[in-house]
Length: 263
Image 1 (cartoon, rainbow, N blue to C red):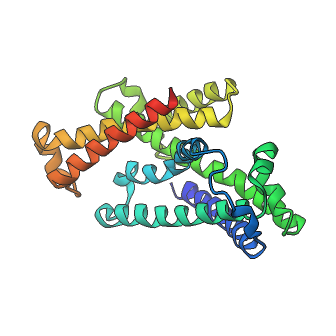
Image 2 (image 1 turned 90 degrees about the horizontal axis):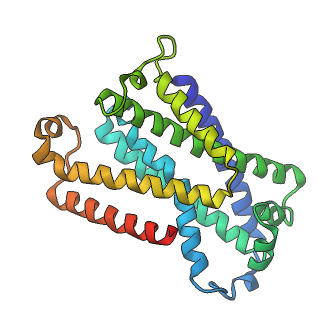
């Protein structure tokens, strides 16, 4: 609803401002000698970061999940995905470059999750460092909000298609939201928090789960023209045979890669 959208926009703006402050501040005060060795411990760390960073792209996937609630989805969904990916990629590259330009990689590893704040304190005032800390928390909140929104829509769709009990398609009469689906996802989220695992383990699990869903979705799109032509004809966006093959094969390769890495 509109209130959720406004909160999400405010959180996102604060997050972007925090990343820009740290990014540009780090670039201005960079120490070139810290970039002498790009992969000091080999490529293992790089692939680990790729898998973990995939968690942060969950919000991009959520854009497609809410296509039914978007005006002119044929135009706005692809445009939103392209713009979002460009912004996220630029901000993440800027932040990573700023961090590695002001803090030795081994020092960052020993410090842990607060390494960015330590690096920021080298060239920014205290209020700016605190703002970056708040921005980091809000960044996680926006990703979690997007994933919860996506998950509840999935549950609602499954219930609407009679794959799970019909109670999960119940809509709140006041807020017009799928309240039973939201309650289910909230309970599952609480159970996950109670396990109190490290964030990297949660990230791997979430990425793996998302890949399963996306692989099944790619398979459904691949088969839909023949298996459900009446539904495919109603879709506003149609993929050519080439892109259906490309998406299905690409999803399968990514799924297998992440599965092997997770093991």
